[in-house]
Image: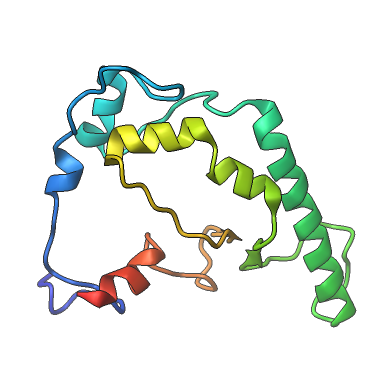
Length: 160
């Protein structure tokens, strides 16, 4: 299918800039906590992703899990009170988004020194992250929240 015939999204561009994602930066001399051996970090540039098992500790992740459970419960109560769902005791409803602007647990995870060290190893010393934490479901075979694979592309790609 020609590019003019495929489904286009706002901010979708034909130009590609692969260099930053195919060429690994020089290996670090003094490895910081959270950084990976060269052969592991190289997988990002070869495969496009890295899976690091048990990177975060239970103590780092449990507060996020607890906050997610609380946010889902709060949303269920809000939907129930508004008459949008008939039962707020079962997890049978579907939600598209929960905003978590004040969640300290996600802020701590997002600013975790080990995570930032790993991002620096892969991306270089100038690491930036989006300051808004959202939880979105993407349920199978549902068009309700059908968005491009990378949500930021709609906003970030439109500047070009």
